[in-house]
Length: 222
Image 1 (tube, rainbow, N blue to C red):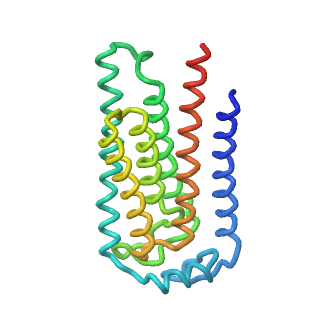
Image 2 (cartoon, rainbow, N blue to C red):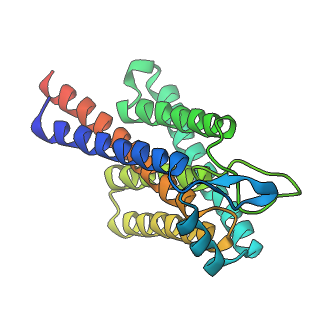
């Protein structure tokens, strides 16, 4: 394994450690019943302070929900790209390695989404349609940052038309920024939910990047 590849996996591990430590803090530090129906939330002082500032803005909640379709269509687009490669090249072995890695990445993202819907760390600060919903981490933040983050890496490698490449990268960054900021000011998540979503998506994107670089290193040395 080359030095840069080792460094990439080290950064991946660092993001995961940050997410794990932060999760422990949320689970065990300053846990108080400040949520709806007396639901408990860790880092209650910080979370309550930020939530009192943002309040609830359901317009931003719906805007960020709609932006989720940008992630869905992006993931579908790369899935179609893999299918096109398979049809044209008539061999599973000839499909680009990074497309396989991206497919595995999407499966991991979905698995994590399902896991945190059942493993409840804390609930939302507001009721959604009259129900308490899982809130940690912000899976919306995780999904959008993960999908658009890996898309940026794909745009950089696959799009050779510079103006188009820059446009797609800027749009992807804009979707990420608006989603993160909008999810926070919507008030449907605690501040710690957003931070954990960023740590987790950072872990995932770096894991994807590290695996792609490792695959390319092996291809060049074979």
